[in-house]
Amino acid sequence: MFGALTDSFTSAIRKIRFHDDDKALTKALGELKKSLLKADVNHKVVKTLIDQVQIETRQNGIGKDQFLAALRKALHDLLEIGGNRGFIFASKPPTVILMTGLQGSGKTTTTGKLAYYLKSKQKKVMVVAADLQRLAAVEQLRQITAQIGIELYDDETTKNPVDVVKAALKKAENSLYDVVLIDTAGRLAIDEELMQELKEVKKAANPSEIFYVADSLTGQDAVKTATSFKEQIGIDGVILSKYDGDSKGGVALGLASQVEVPLRFIGSGEKMEDLEIFLPERVVNRLMGFGDIEGLAEKTASAIDEKTAKKLTKKIQKGEFNFNDFLEQMESIKKMGSMSSIMGMIPGMGNMSKAIKDFDIENSSELKNIKAMVSSMTKRERENPELLNNARKQRIANGCGLSIVEVNRMIKQFKNAGKMAKKFSGKAGMKNLQSLMGQMGGANALRR
Ligand SMILES: Nc1nc2c(ncn2[C@@H]2O[C@H](COP(=O)(O)OP(=O)(O)OP(=O)(O)O)[C@@H](O)[C@H]2O)c(=O)[nH]1
Ligand SMILES: [Mg+2]
Image (cartoon, rainbow, N blue to C red; front, side):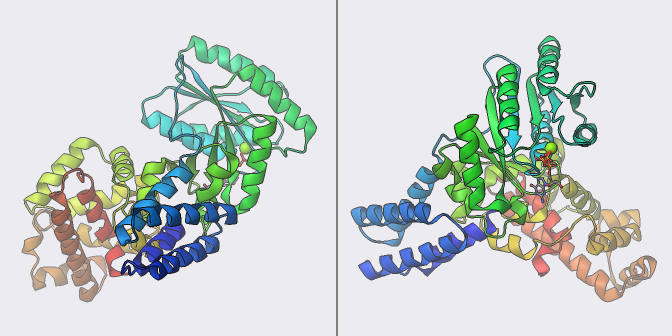
């Protein structure tokens, strides 16, 4: 995520060769402007950003540090419009969220993702099926909620979403739910009848917040439609969906300042775990190539429990990381969402994330080969990779139907992963990184 945008910033930053002269600043700003426009950031937003960086750099004396500081501040100012916040719980539960948006924008999927996210935070969540327009909409939600183990409130005997919402809220209050997510039908802002229905649903739900789910593939139209919903219904946040399909990504940068409503979450895939909180501070770090350690820790923490992570850290530090751990780690990455989104969060690895964007761990032949190889090892060999001499490697190769060259390569990869992991394990706050490094070896990322 943010791959294209991060490239714009890091390449502009890299190109600055400041010798304290004005020409260098103009050139750097020109580079930045060009690449932001190429990334589809709105031209007015680009102008505001560039002007601010220019003025502030000049004020503080032209130099690379001053430029970087000014850029960081300008990005912050831009993204923080409307507030810097994740999910906000109402002071009195249940927190009621109304999901709105155009047809097919991703409301139902995002409702599922939010429910899944809140469940991982130990919240008791109810999803309400208030899309009674589209055929099979309720069934779609039933499947999604069943998959993630979330309570669904539905009533297909009525065509009136207001009735459904009222009954659902009564149940949520009685049964002490923390959060109620209401999925509504897709509609156009120009469709007066459906907008009227939404207003009535809003009145009945009295939501803590209204989210507008915008399809990032619609580019600047996402800004227009969000603004229109804001004017007619009132929205408290935007969730940008399908960001994984948006190779440019610029709309995320300008959205908050253009709509004057904060961007709250970003959806980056069809899976339930493909949702990220949009927190300006973190995003600025990533855009400037510093990675997002907190986000990474959050992702890994939900996939690997703390005990496993600690055990692994110890093993790695002692140089005892073995094939069983290696396999286990690769398996757990499946729970974590796409590899490239994780890579983008690691400092300095932003570029690599692009290289492995298309890597599909679940269907990876590499993973299958590694599994086959490990299953051809004896128990002792798995626990003690040092035992693997040529004769043993040949036996393993025969056993798993791979060539000795393949086996050697995978063993080498495993060893590299272990080394990398050890290197990272010393740094404070990076507790989860080492396990990730193990996984990266499995994902074959380093070879590409
Ligand atoms: N790649 C990708 N696909 C997504 C994302 N979010 C949703 N989709 C897909 O977009 C399509 C439409 O998603 P829905 O959640 O059904 O959209 P909706 O807004 O509820 O649609 P209606 O109820 O018909 O208005 C589905 O095929 C989803 O899998 C995303 O972040 N990335
Ligand atoms: Mg839907």
